[in-house]
Length: 466
Image 1 (cartoon, rainbow, N blue to C red):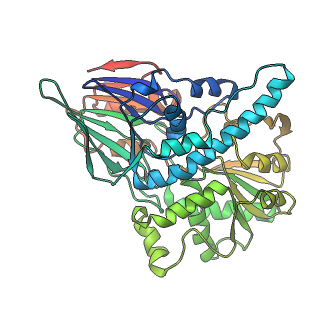
Image 2: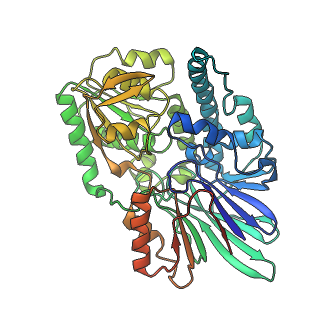
Image 3: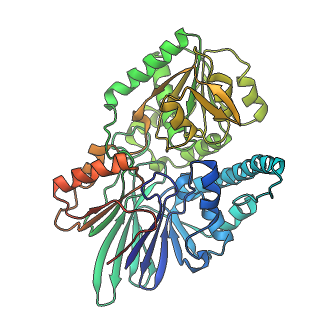
């Protein structure tokens, strides 16, 4: 058996790992690389392997940095089945279509610049037609249902608690000579106290684990403090008469935010101000959340569902799909809250809201998740005085704040807890992926201190044989 680390290695984007088992090639994830525009196109367009030689793809969840390059893989010749949970399939239906739309818009913008330089035009990574073709290869699988993938290879999805439908993957492998290996792929690990979706179901009894490490060197804020911190932040911004602009991933983060705002509003802990979710994708994704109550947490059931109350809708909240209505928000005076995608501020309507509001000191930009290096969100978080949006330079005068509680990723303590059912004697190898060095390397030291003997931080292109 061989594991080849391709994407999501020493970075938090473009997740992609290739397994060579019993003569079969099995791809774990096929995500889009996100970062500098000059780097991303070529990285995403070209694969390091022949897509037509991949026998199957196993997808942990629907976030674009894990699923977003699947249509390109299919258009380049991949003919195998794509296994994901039923909720992930439903989310991919809308997320990949949205991604195709953004690919076409982005390449249109790039080609205008290339034309001015007398450079040849580029094609989008993929089109809506490519998405439709790819969706025909998806197979929905329930949690805890064991699938016989190929002779000597079977797998089971366990709830990862990261977003709706997210899963860890337990692969049971029998190689020649009856050598048995239990290989785990964590996907992205969620938080045990998330109020919307269920807590992670830990992968156990493993020999090898490929494990995410996004927040391997950070502890999130205690959950009991978060509601009041959010309420106080909103009240202060309202007193300043400004707008609260929240870049948030359309799937997962937006629904958690809406849930908490609904709760605070019902408890009279925040004033009655307009709240807008300005993202067609978030609107559609919220409908998928509503259609999968089996994935939702007990708290959501207790506070909302058992009272026939919609956790994702209330009187002061408006979901926006139409472009004209989105533009009108920039003409309306504050105070108000605008939640818009994308979370890393690398595309979508959030760019327009930032362009219109980032230079007003009355406004607040509230970050509720992780942002990869070189993204616009990261530049603002890092305190850059000037940032570039749509090719124009803007001075950052608005206040900004980071609230890590809303992250869908487990922190260092929660990652360590995730390993609690795996003995230091039996879990022989841990490979840390989906993490930058400042997070993964300190986490590696923690694991070594705990007694795990072989903990690696593989580079992109690295191959490990067993």
